[in-house]
Image 1: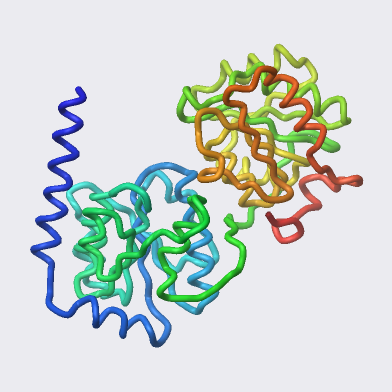
Image 2 (image 1 turned 30 degrees about the horizontal axis):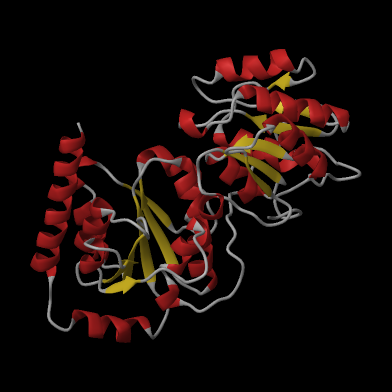
Length: 354
């Protein structure tokens, strides 16, 4: 299996080098710098994986481009269209489909700029090749790593002083704007969605990858600490996570099991919540994006890169801690809560932002 993965990696890298040679044009990079220096642009962002969190991590880039006056289109995986659909700063979403069926129509759009939003520290060959093919005569920006950077007209080196994924991704468009504003995620407005009356918190014990998912007992600890503060824990879940919810609610009888929720309903619950307690996963990014104080529990993952360690949020790394239960309880006690909560129907997305 290791050898197969290694061969796949070598084949992808060889293909990237081949495409870079095939698409090379003399003077393209020098002309690109001149073209980027003037006027507002029609920009296409290319991020084609199927993870909710990755789509949310692209929203600071979307917002920054729109604030600079550029028109933003996004090529994304159909499974995460629901994350960006209806975003106020996205002009159009394009679904990435197998066999590159969408690439011809996209190329015909003749965008001024195409940005490969792939990984900044490791090569993302498929994303880089798609951006290059779609770009055609457009100026193509993207990470400067090898060999993906060879396909870019303007390879963008990582910004110094941070490993933040949201920050590095936003930096990919730095040739188009200069701004020192904080990097913040965003999500569309949602209709209110109520589960309980009075002050409550969202507790989400799920996560895509088991090795970085904190055990449900720690979420039961968090739920108990919330009850001690007079806050009802509402335990949310996704497909296949029923056992996790049952474990939390069994260990903390005062917790309330949420009904099945859509992405918009989960966002609405978080907007009305005093706090969200979750793993390092998609719901963490969603909670931060809608402005809910978020306590994220990390395990075996880099907090600086994937977390949002700024007020009112707290990123708690449990890796290697001797008493994880105590750490979770103390963190819950330290989280800010509103002294006079208005409930989900009284708090809109613009009243409390991360």
